[in-house]
Length: 260
Image 1 (spheres, rainbow, N blue to C red):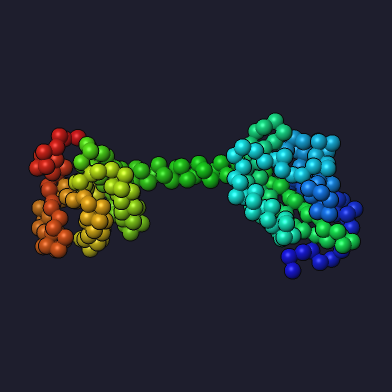
Image 2: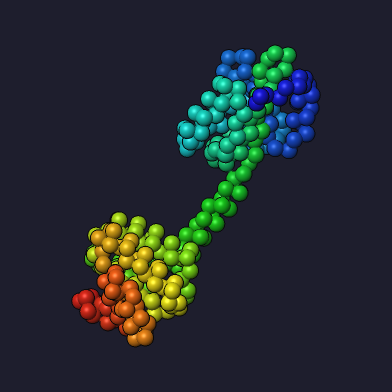
């Protein structure tokens, strides 16, 4: 069962929840609109509301313009079916400032009356930290796989460092998304600053050509040494019809484009 099966008293619950630092409320599902019948000091601290402003009201006053409707709908359905609910959603304090509220709701029966215990955790700092981390990761990815639109028809991808499997997948993902959004017909991948390991290079170059062809674009590779170009021409070019140039300038000149 999803219920707390023992029969605690309201007094025991309120005494326990009064010792909780985070926000806590008890609602009475037997009354119309499932009103709040208890709140602790933690709830007042998080939301800014007093007991006089909260008791007897439904918790929906915490919702606002940017609270996700689907989250609210799921929470209401869980309460309707007397099921536990846990989710992080955007709520609003009394002064109107938004905060990320990790809500943990559990049904409990006391003397054959259904109540809900709702715990609130202000996780705003944690959510913002995660957003900052994701933003930093995106910046690193953008630096790892820079894509330059030379004009409406040509894209240049200058690569430096080493190409491992994870970076290769990122390259294919970013390239396919960029090709989908544009009308680019030619992709010049410059590997002047890239360490080329023969086996690995063959694999990601083949994947690169395959991905580009699917999107209707041609790939040429610049910055390849004569020795490496000879090897690739014997393998990749023979199968995938990929052209190699000794420098980016040579590739741009061959295709009638201005230098960067």
